[in-house]
Image (tube, rainbow, N blue to C red):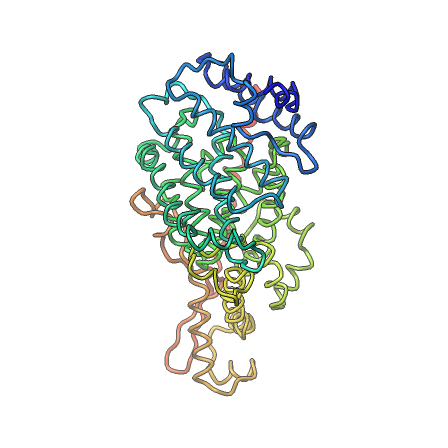
Length: 510
């Protein structure tokens, strides 16, 4: 045991003891200690001792080395809680830094550890007033839980890269390790136990320093994300239906990674449901927030993740503004033009390949939840992404075929015959031209969010239809009658809005 203890650096032993003791303390400022230990000291020791294939020691090794000999647990299950939390950050480090060491055995261990951890954390009556985990740590637990699930789904769908013993385990226990139904049920359970939806329906803001509120809130975002990964965008929006994303209160969680994840997956759902206007609004809110609060989010792995998602959101915004012309905030508009000025021009000319390229970059990596598909020999890589891309390409093709030209010609007339319009677009079939006009009408009507039409019993998925074009028309036999639907801008509203914003700034300075 002494020899084993010598192999573990003294600084690491002291850190583990300090972390274990901090979790047992009931002091008011214990969260500050935990934030320092978790978000700073852990990363420092990782960079110093656990690089180049080295991982943190297993809990059993620490116990055999008598690391916990002088640790006194206040709670009855204090040791179990610390063990589950320590194993969570240890395995997360392996997934982040030593991907080649991830095996089906480690995936199974991690899956079981997460469910043990969730079970311990949600025993509200015993631990709610005692466990004081920082919000950042709770978010990372939920985020990593979903990441490891999606990682295992991809691993399971690549049979040629598995060893014989791993294939045997998957064939016998494949449905019990990171099972999609069990993962979804676990997240739903966390939301229900926390009663977060009821609390949000009563108040728009909840106290996220309460551990159960925090777990429930982040689990809702987790459900949004996992539904989007499955391609169920409607259910994804329903998962966060009690959140008003167009209210600035949503941005006050102070966990940037969670806010970015919420807005990114919501925006992507809007794009796939052909609600481009709402997607633009969501993307503009979060990108404007990021530009105004440019600062290090954390020294953890989340920094790179937030940066990557931000780049994806700019690509998604470039696509949506090309499909739905909207006025952007000046700072967001400048940042977008700096990144994708050329691509936006190409998309506005109707180049489908540019749409496809940006969409493939912006889309999250989808997974298939069906374990029964993974043991055949003819499994293609990234099938969900390819299918999603094909759906979007078909939508773009329908939107770009003749429709931009028809819209341009309609702006020039107050009435025009189908035959004459067909001559303009080189189409001699009157019935086909009529079909294009109906398609244009369909493509330019989208569901749109409105506070006047929304209640908490009408989620984000049940908003009202609105026309997203500056030209309106109707058909009478073979005659197209066009009505100009351009609205005159009311400058008084803009002036009052900016005056109020200026007064708020002056008030905060005083």
